[in-house]
Length: 87
Image (cartoon, rainbow, N blue to C red; front, side):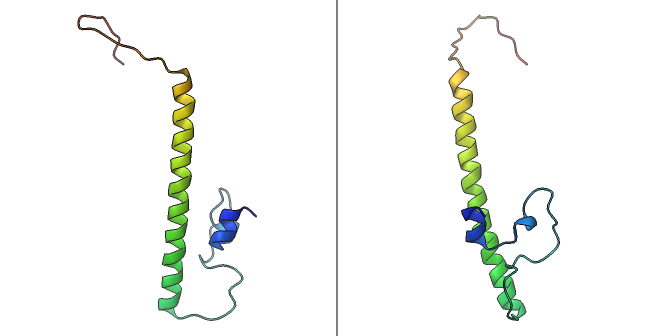
């Protein structure tokens, strides 16, 4: 299991594409009963952690995409009166 899944404690099928999305956001290994406020606090905490991980991954993906785009892009300069095509 990847470290991000171990860190969250979620069942992988809850957030992998094509997985079964029914169940709880608490880990499947939890055996004790909890009150509704405790449950809500745990879910909120886990969603905050998941959100931070998603934001980090999106930032990394954006940086990678930017690097790939910038490898082949060329700097272009235009002067007043130049004919340019506008899409």
